[in-house]
Image (cartoon, rainbow, N blue to C red; front, side):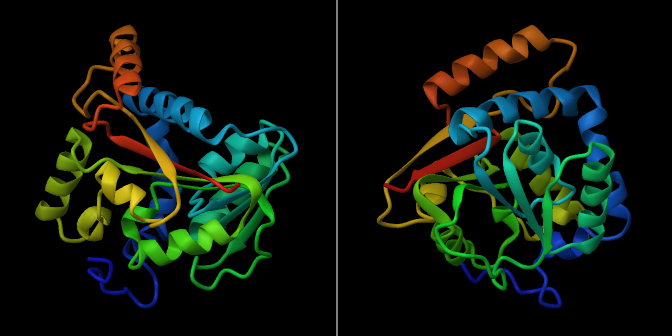
Length: 244
C-alpha cells in the first residue's frame, strides 16, 4: 500500500496539483462560513495535540500557503515552513510579509529536505500525508527532526468520515481532482506510520460537509462530545508522538 501512488514528475500528486491557480484560491475556503467553522475546530484540536509554546523552534512539513505556519508564528513560535510547491510558498511569503511575521520558507520535497536532526521542539504536518508516495518513510524522517522532549504531530483526513466520502466521490467523478491520489487514514493506519514508537491519537471535525454553519453551537457541542469519546468518524485525525 505504501507504494500505491506513482510519482507525478517527481512531485507528489497534491504538490503537482497545488501549483498555479490553486495557490491563489487555496485560502478562500477558510473565508466561507463552513470553512471558518471547520478551521476553528481543527485548530482547537491541533493546539490541544501540539501544545506550541512561545519561542519554540517549529517545523511545518507541507506548509502550503502557510496557514498553520503563520498561525504558530503569531503565537510567538520560531517557524520554518517547507513545501514542494513554489507558487504555494509565494502566497505564504506575501502573507508573512503583510503580517510582518518572520517565517523561514523552504522550497523542498520532504525526501530531499536537509535540516539538522533533533533540532525542533515541534514538527508537524497538517493534511499532507494523504498525498505522499511513501508516508511511513516521511514520518520517520519527520521524527528525526524532533529534539528530545519535543513532539511530532501528524494531522490527516479521517477515512471513516463523511468528509473522506465526499472527497473520494469527487475524485471518482473528476480524475484531475487533487483527491484522485489521496489516501485517507483510519486511526490505526495513522499510528502505524511510526511502528515501535508509542503515540496516541485524537479525532476532530465531528460534523459533515453538509452541516449548516449557522448552527455553530450545535457544531461545537458535537465537537466536544466527539473529541471526548475519540469517535472514529471524525474528519480530522491527529497523531502525537513525544520523544523522551
